[in-house]
Amino acid sequence: MQVEKDKVVSFHYRVSEEPGTEVESSHGREPMVFLFGHGGIIPGLEKAMAGHAAGDAFEAVVAPEEAYGKRREDFVQRVPKKYFRDGVHLKPGMVTSLNTRDGQRSVTVLKIGSSVVDVDLNHPLAGKTLSFAVEITDVRDASEEEIAHGHVHGPGGHH
Ligand code: ZN
Image (cartoon, rainbow, N blue to C red; front, side):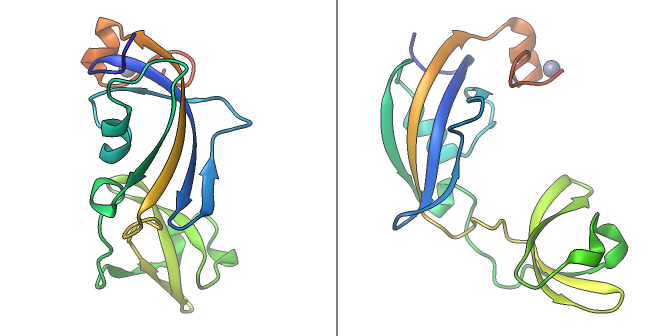
């Protein structure tokens, strides 16, 4: 079965920043599972998977525009310390998560004041070209319910 719209795809990946520093890997844990064609993963990786089948291994280089976007230089915000889960242990340069109206967001700490923190709201991988090594472990049809919800149910998914 081929990877295409409305298939549920399981895969392992390693991702590196070009050139060659590993950022993250799914090896050693459960594969990632997502519903193809519903914006569940970055667009460049989804495109690279199209037409592959379970058992395929391949590499894909993804430009920032197709990954986490370009870096915005002025994307800095001053946030009250109380909005951080772990405000006491913040250090400049640290990547932490912040609860925003749009859900959790990864931010980089720039400067810490007594009651406020300046953070860079760019995704830590914004502006980076990423290199993925992907192994597709399973492809199956999605249920009607999964397609209606736009995400995977069951192992690795929602609910
Ligand atoms: Zn659901």
